[in-house]
Length: 282
Ligand code: MF3
Ligand code: CO
Image 1 (cartoon, helix red, strand yellow):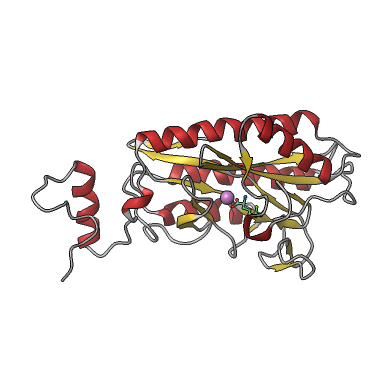
Image 2: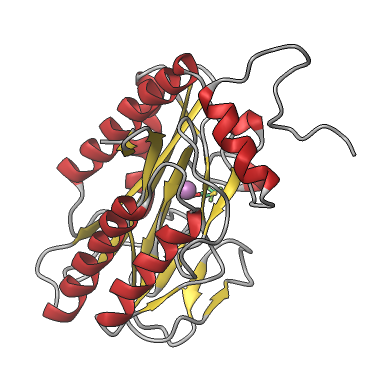
């Protein structure tokens, strides 16, 4: 049998972390590849990228209002990012044409900014910002409520934010990715909502999308082992109605709810520490 990835190099003493992960690997658990357990320097780089990413979202939150187009948001994001020495990760990513995703009401995610889409009173919009700084990626999104919205959609936005926080708190070092999804699904469904299953959170940092896949539903104790040094997003998409979605055939990007009822999403980039998750996109 070949050497397991987490076995120490020949003649070398294992670190405490290597020893722990190897024990799980020997039990047959899904463990992270070494490349996604990052060192302090790499985590610092992602943290700095996260500072710019948060700056972008703060800038959007200062100016977003009814009457503005989603292309106006795109321009704001693009210019702020460039002015801070960074690059918007979505631009040209697998052919994505803009610098940010703007997803309104029944759009679940990957809405494409447009001059012909104007924000109006009562809309809810997710602005999903991803930044590359010195080669390091960060990724976060927030919901914005335009003017006064209905009690029902305000609750959807609030419960979705709680889902992100509850998912974050469920993630423990040497726990499993499935612990996050189980906690999120429980909270969403308790409130009468459903969890989108076709899209997930992801490892991030040295690339835009990496393992692990962070499902927002499922069972505790399943999925990849969570090891200190792993950096990943949690980004639940929660629907007011059915969990079912479809993709816009005209742009092959934008995801909508099948019943055209509203959907909300919040996202942060996190690093797993010895004590639990730390947010890198505050
Ligand atoms: N920001 C999205 C995420 O959370 C990724 C969008 S891919 C893009 O993973 F090309 F649409 F930007
Ligand atoms: Co993401």
